[in-house]
Image (cartoon, each protein chain N blue to C red):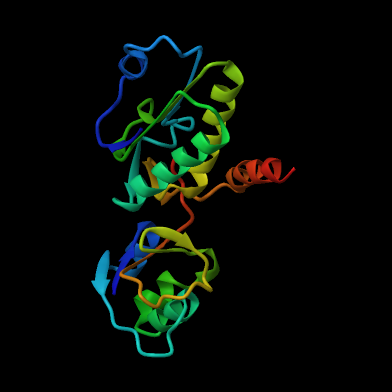
Length: 83
Length: 151
């Protein structure tokens, strides 16, 4: 699946987009965040305040307990500040 | 109609296009959000967004407004890229037969856009650059509409 990062999540992670294949057992957004955090200090830093980070699956806002199975595109970003 | 664009917009031209050839509209409400310099602290603002989801989310918000009010026209234009103090950021125009629907829908669109549309502001100025933090007031403004719907 493709993962996108925006705003300060992107800056801290040091990457805008990547293809990932999380292992079986990573079933939800929260579990995906935990898995991403364990990949290195940049990700641990980007997701340090994981409770404030918002997620979208296939361009629809989801909560951290959302299931990721079948997702083509998952995005992580800070609370939005448009308008 | 929704548009996400780098370019500025002209509110007069937008409203003229929206009204062209129509005589059924009785009320038009418009809102423009602009960049503030915050007493000299901000010299530029860069808006990042999530292409694809931004359009999808604005379309969803527009559909929600159309489901709640009898609108004859609705327009959301949101800019991205680097803007200067005084520049336009966002335009919302609503049109209806009577003024209440247009006023309420315009406020609803702005409240929802601020909490749902995937844009992020980064301000820079003499003190450096920083990502703008989300304002809890925006969440409470948006949730008020849910309370109203539940009443």
